[in-house]
Image (cartoon, rainbow, N blue to C red; front, side):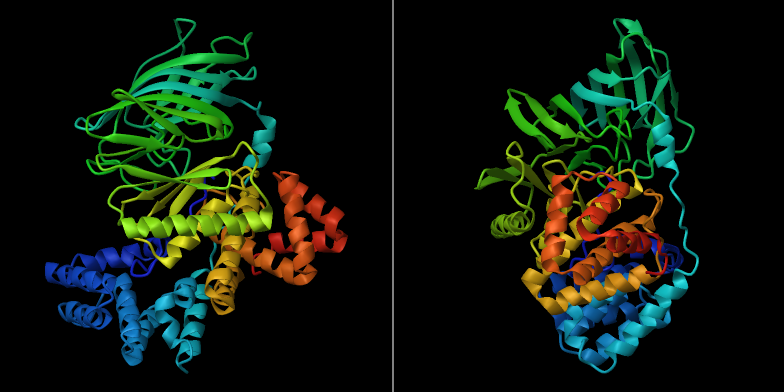
Length: 560
């Protein structure tokens, strides 16, 4: 889904992106005073952790902190606590966790669900530590930015314009860091005077034509991006060249300067190129989610191409076809790009990677099959025409991932158990993808995908770990924005849609029983429910008015 970003809490890369961002100002000021020796030792401690030398890792963290008078960056102190716990030094682990807690550390989910810290859970100091962190979260979330989303009403007032298809020639020049594009985009203006698109801000537009005549347009490179997830995008407004013909093939010719591409889901380096919705290398229409595409791609040798469609190489050109309905055109490239395929029933799974260990690739295939079978047993077989899925292991820093139709991308350098949890969430979107991901109704997609993941965790890791996640999500839900009508673009939407939504589904299952919950879930899927109104109506018909009203109340609550 478009906004289907999950926080993958992998061991060692412990602190989630959201947590790091929330504390980045403090870290930035402090980091200006830190000598290089500190970072050198921290990197050494990280490496020792990766090879399971936990005691050596813990002592190396201590050596790093001694360089700055016992202080530490927040994520380094957390990682040190994990190493001490794994090395069976609980006193030292609690020392560092206590230091974090008294300094208002509030990421309860990370503490509660991190397997590195499981050895501490029976210690008498554990529960008081959790209570302190829980209180920190309540205090830090006392002033929530719960913005109501008015876009649903606005959308109903506008004509339903949409892009039908992209047929583009794409030339990627790695040396010059440019992407030259020309070709046709089929657009349904639906009698509107204009159409707003989003395009990479550093783009030189050579021409836009319809029937060999220039199309009038404006490209606002000075204003802020209209979409949070495309921070470098700018608004390209096309003036409707012909109101008689609704659907038009518009010719585009432009070149994107891809210098300094960085951030979530985007990259343009010599080692890894990842271009798609988050860069807006192609003109993005925010509400068009059912287009097809055909791309002819060329790139410097010896780079290889893959992406969100089916790839065929012909001489020095790569063809990428998305014959299914989608909302993204993702292109990835690397000199070391590799792929392997397996067959699971009628579904072909392709794994794309670079320098991933072969033994880990084998583990990924096994995990992929386990996750696929788990979801299929709950939700049933995918549609017959959905026989292909691609899974990309991105070699970029950090954790996390996103999914599209038949496509999953996850940042990771090795196989871990938590990687399987990420796969579980994103693969669940092969089933849960009917609601509009740009609106608050996306809670249907994300809550069910995340709760599916929790059920998979229970299957793999046991009831204790599952309960730990539910407990942590419930703590977060206690001081979060209501799901109902939340602005999908604000950071607070993550907790509301993913975590609070998961707790709601858990409580619903407890309330009506597993059998009724399973039947209701399958009915939601079979009806292809897209909105909360449809969801509540189905709940009323299947479960009764009292349950439907209970769900609506929960969706509207701030302190769940």
